[in-house]
Image (cartoon, rainbow, N blue to C red; front, side, top):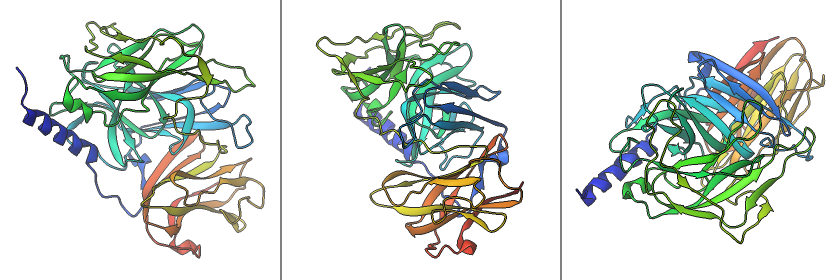
Length: 443
């Protein structure tokens, strides 16, 4: 029976509430580790690959070439981290039934050369029901992101993202659960050439089969689904992406593993693939990888051109990491911009900041000083060698601009902690008493 227009309006309204649900942030930092159960870190270089997982199965998979080069164009390292559970900047609406921990993957405020695969275990839900959700700091809201793989046996889903942060698995209620029904998600499947990693990136979406789903994913342009790695870190096929039933243009990109000294090149096919998803993907057994995938092929007349889709953000120039690392991130927009500074005080009157980037004893360095440029903002202090024994304090200061929310990830002693809060006191004189103290420790 045809549904009335008021039904679709109601569903769109409810989902809008889900996306815009928020809570007030505190002026003081909140240590997400206060309820921390699991914590994992690993270091991956520009030409290397790696994985990091927690005992409960929350994980990250990085293929060779995903980590950008440093400012000089050379090989660089990034420390990836997982904190589970973690307190997000805003809670999800009650319309979202969370089926996993809300966990944080770092570094946030960072754009990669190739999508990073995030692995999300879920409970008390079937593959046909569960979604991946991500807190988008630029939009200041939670949103649904496509999965590239859902395993109903191990109860794990995989998503591919160019920016990290807060993630969870959830079933969206009030008409939006992805049940095994005619209006549930479908998906594209691409069988590429052996030896390449592939990713499918949405260029455009229209003609939604079920109108309310236009609000379901928001704007899906730029969302990706990528092939993964085998246990030997070689590419595996096929490449898949779960999407609402609609008509799409899809950019197809690929890369090869590269060498230990060469950053792999990325290529994108010059003509987008097109296709219409008109049926759901269903999971009929414990070992099912899903049936009902819509086959996607490359159109004739195109060629592989070096570069990535235009919807991908520019890769972030990699900054330093070490046994100790403190990274401050916040977001500047056209309507609200701030210059926030990271300060580290240490023994023997040590003070590392924008005004004195190197510690006198040569152990620490600030290598990223961000002012009021728009987008993801980052300041970073890291250790170059073993730090001098003594007491240290990390502070955040609002040098100029608007009140803003911030996040500080601290890596020390093989563990990670993230602190979040809001800084509102203007302090262009760098009075340490007016700064927010993030953490203090003694070596």
